[in-house]
Amino acid sequence: MHVLRVMSAVAAAVVVLMSAVSSRAERVVEHLFDAELFDGNNGWVVGAFGVIYRTSDGGATWKSQETSTENDLFSIDFTSATHGVAVGKSGTILATEDGGETWVKRESGTDRNLFAVTYASPDHVWAVGDWGAVFESKDGGKTWTDRTLSEDVVLTGIAFSDEQHGALVGEFGTVQMTNDGGATWTPSDLGTDKTIFGVAFTSPQEGWVVGMDGLILRTTNGGQSWDLQRGQKVSQTLNELGALEAIRNPGLYDIAISKDYGYVVGDIGMMLVSEDRGATWKEHKLPEDMALFWLRGVSATPSDQAVVAGANGLTVRFDGDKVQLHRGG
Image 1 (cartoon, rainbow, N blue to C red):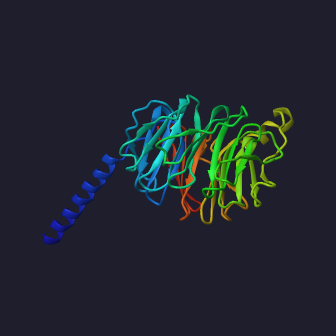
Image 2: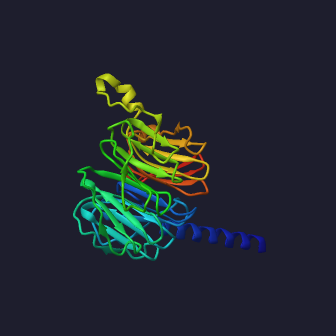
Image 3: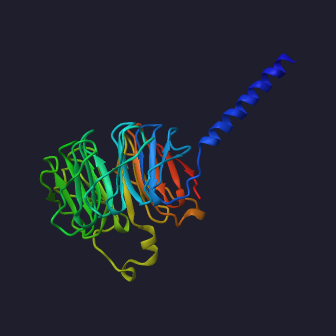
């Protein structure tokens, strides 16, 4: 009887624990546009109608956070487990200093959509968006200064390898580099006019951009030249390219590089994983019933874990090249 009582108590404790976990987990149904995985446990995703969800178990479960906005949020970045910034539609900027328990609206001074945000250092934050919009914060996201470019070009991504060295990207093959902390920006010639959506730099010399028609380009000399890894630089019509080839090379939206791996995501369920830190890429497709889902954001940690965010609340967890799907709505 004593053994049975102990077993019953253990079983009851397991049920209580499972119920507690279930009560904390929430079903994510909104379209998600970006992900930020700060470490192996703490991460966030943002999306339609101003939603932000947080995970404390590496993406296994998610819990919503109050944002007080219904504007779509397109990008999020954290410099620590507590300090983060999210940006979105109509110049929306939200900042947190407590891991997202509270999100505070910050004045951007613009109504232009902001598509990407990144920390160059704990105090130095950059955001980019429509019509050449570039905004800079030197106090961790509290106040913002307009650094908009003279060019009328939609900017879709920005990345810094350190506070001085960064790159911003956008339509018409736009890539501009800085080596003085954003005081000046210098064009880098990709050799293509295709729209670039995502950018990642691991050092001032080594970086990648991804974009239309499955395009992946890599530089190892700080943007002086770019090597084609995937897709084609020259734009082609559907008749020239062929429908099958177009499906094989959907648009790619984001890229993240970890210690030993690389991750790229895009349209029609496209996920690319590099097992040699961005030298070569292999396809990982979503299941057939999710083949039309788009995947918009990916974030990776130095410990080779990653989280992907996409359509209909879909999140994907990577541990190295091992993948686990979490269906939303």
